[in-house]
Image 1 (cartoon, helix red, strand yellow):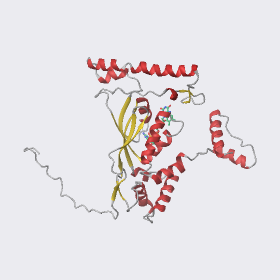
Image 2 (cartoon, rainbow, N blue to C red):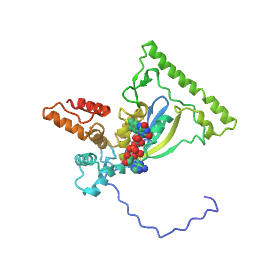
Image 3 (tube, protein in one colour):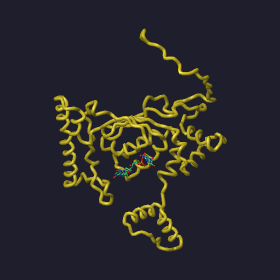
Image 4 (cartoon, rainbow, N blue to C red):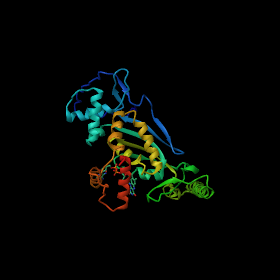
Length: 317
Ligand SMILES: Cc1cc2nc3c(=O)[nH]c(=O)nc-3n(C[C@H](O)[C@H](O)[C@H](O)COP(=O)(O)OP(=O)(O)OC[C@H]3O[C@@H](n4cnc5c(N)ncnc54)[C@H](O)[C@@H]3O)c2cc1C
């Protein structure tokens, strides 16, 4: 403290604070780790760097989890009840099934992520998180580009205008040639990096020089999100309709939070991720089948019919 430092005058008489100590010792849901990291793609990662609650009362011999924070908040609405784990599980499952969402907002996770810019563009659409990104105005973007391996190059899907699913056959000469040509194209684009460096060294501002870099270059951010919105992110981005590269991050994110909120994740799989939404037309088709009919479907829309066919197959109808 310098000699000139003057303590600020208190704005009011300080309050007496009552402290309640837990019955069980507090334990860290991250097991004392500074970060828990999973490598994703060729140069990317997702690291869990903090959680709320981080410290939870944990009976001897039990693994600390944050599910209790959801139950604690829910009991404000439903009363204390009993506190057995089996009843916590039942309450969590009820909440998730009935989309009583706000108790799930009581748990938060903070991640440090490195991903290609084209993945970040999809990710940033999830507006309910708090984000702080690497500034390519302030700093030079590091020389890290996402390049899929030859056997990961996907063809444009014929059924889904937005997707690529089938791989190029790397044991067929004409196919491997096209896949290789694509990788060569990425190499050419990467070769622009020395020019980016050169121009910034000559005095072109970083905020303009970056315009010449491709969206395969990696960026980084801190991303903090509550569990309710994180589950929504996972539902959309672990889904096979999401681009494979963002799916890879979503699956890694899932694996980082799963041990911290195991009961919630179990309920999410049962009632959201692996569940099925049925439209009125689909319910009527099932009713028609149950009456011994052919399962007449009340729409001629090709896409809608294909979606119903997929659900029907899953239902074994
Ligand atoms: C497979 C796939 C394909 C996609 N294709 C495209 C595409 O072609 N073009 C495109 O632009 N986007 C596309 N998206 C992005 C998509 O439309 C959503 O923007 C993105 O998934 C974020 O979803 P969200 O709005 O539910 O998430 P969040 O932004 O996290 O919002 C969660 C929920 O919070 C509420 N909310 C958040 N912000 C507001 C607000 N300002 N006002 C009111 N309610 C709010 C809404 O209920 C919202 O559903 C695609 C997404 C997926 C998964």
